[in-house]
Image (cartoon, rainbow, N blue to C red; front, side, top):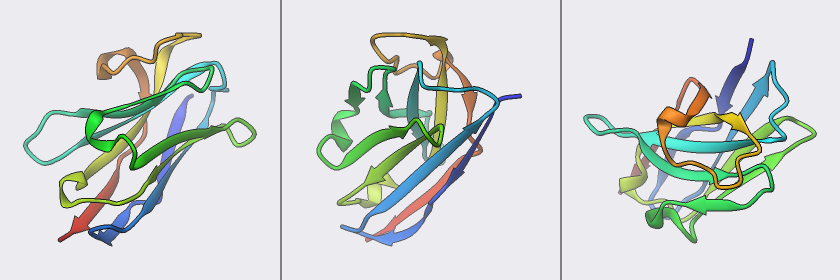
Length: 126
């Protein structure tokens, strides 16, 4: 079965950095878009970043220039480097695998992602 295991969450101060990692087992995801979403208490799950199978990235405007999504095909994983963190970045972060292979434009819709990580808490103090 396909499983996504996240790591790297934690507590940081405003302006700090964290790196989230998501290791996938059960499926080689080289040809699938990968994405990160986040969800704060009482809010809807929000798109953060995605990487298509050609490694073209797209970001939510609020994180553009601060976050970088990347994949390591050798490790079958995806990462999210988060820099210049702000309190509003506080949320549970989820990695996900697209349901469809070879999608040229990575979708930003949670419904289109078939598999999800368990979530990693990121807390940014002011």
